[in-house]
Length: 384
Image 1 (cartoon, rainbow, N blue to C red):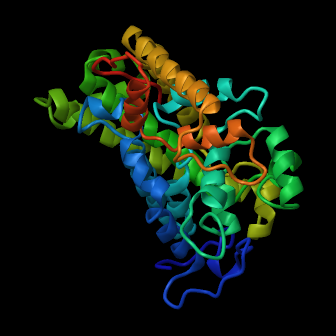
Image 2 (tube, rainbow, N blue to C red; image 1 turned 180 degrees about the horizontal axis):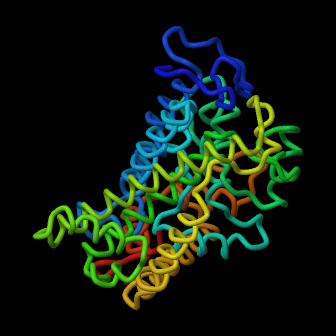
């Protein structure tokens, strides 16, 4: 650790431990060890070829799930340091939070969930947990990465009640319990949730303008962005183009980071919590101020209406869903040789695991090999 931990922070010396006991590492804390295992995992490497907003093959400079995860980790660590939270835990959660995402972003996830109706459905947060608990095959003594409870809790950002009940049966008092009890996760997990939102709003503006699907003038209609674009121009009157875009986003990110730090400190003080064990019952404490929350929500609404629902976007989303649906049907009928089915899994769950692990380009190639004729158009977007 490189800074003093706040009394409410998660301390690796007091972790709730791993599902399979292991001797501690001599030079790393348990949360540092989790981060390292995530970075070396197969699922993490695949993120470089998975959609964030723009399909991976559409341009080298657009974000992927990998670069998004790195940006979330950077923002998370910066905020954690100011708040005295555990940076290593924040980084581990941030780097792992999208490991279960399907190819083609949310379009792929929606299609796979529809295919899995009647078979338990598909939730990408639950799939991320499944990746680190079961699907990674690296160690001789256990499946998965055998991460600490705190890391696993943070990875499971959302979970339906039905799935939480299944998790609770398998692991009483484990990571599913808080969804049944209505309690909050660690402050580090809360921070990753908010850093995720901050990151994707900012980089979706960047990638959206770069793609030409939205303009700088359109984004300036959003008060949050307009305020910082005006600030950038006040300091640099001749600024224009990409430099104006980048400086406006930089100022907006900085302001949101400072807002989270101040609002969270105020929330912690108002809640009166004194120890990390009290965090669960205190509700969400890592937050925006009310004003910044409203402005951030307005920016998100703008992106949804103008970028994610762009006509060109809608077409590519339809294409992506078709690829996933047809791959699913084909693999259930005739499982490929590379597909492995674990004890207790249905054929459909095994196929969902297989497709969710695909990169965009692998899924497109597999679809073409089975006779698919779709050709994705440039600037294909599938959601933030």
